[in-house]
Image (cartoon, rainbow, N blue to C red; front, side):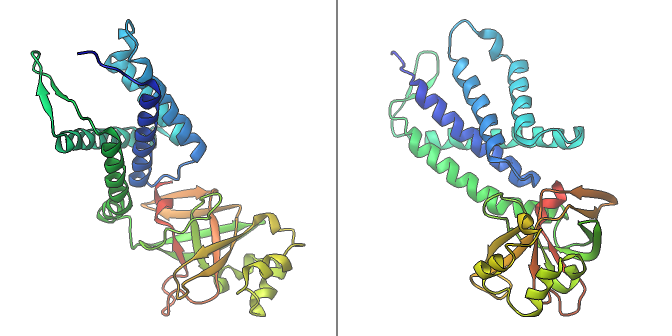
Length: 302
């Protein structure tokens, strides 16, 4: 029986699966993926999957070649931030790949209604529903990545801890106690930077006078008006409006400011992070004032 392979379908299916694997890896490692980098890494994996179909290229089908491609994908998608984090991302990529591969194979047999056994004891399906298998695999992976990652991090002790947080802005700094909050998955919509929520009174010493005046006069509720009034501020390039649906407001807007960097102390180590936004909240986060900031849990794995 002649088997027909459509190269465009091979590229598309592998690209989608690679994107899903990398996203799932990022969810469990807490890494904030760059869309451009993850697309480049997925494309490399898809091209490799296409090349191995050509006859006479047995050298690229061995284990070493597959490991090299996986290393390249991890390096492109996550970068290199030390051997410990690189090895963790590499291992998680393989676990996610085995999970999705096994899931897709199981769904293939589950959804197939006509299986044939060849003389070489190979099981073939004459009605391979690849698009249904692909869609179901993505949906299951999304559920595992969205909720399974939260349970995993909570089990690993990365949640609900209070840790020291220091924010640096324009040569000044403020130190507060921050709660690592399971419910804080707030990101800035455009850049996808994670957002740390800090009480206005706590971060007030860092803010320029024009922002403090607006909060003092309760002019922070209307986001568009807020940015208009701050259009002449030298900090305007650092400011963002962040939509949220918590903190007692169904459809609220936080004013966010990009600091020079933040510093967190976790597990005896000090981490300095720059790719983050600080959302300014006008009320108290804790009535007992045991913490004054909500830390995005993803930052613990940065």
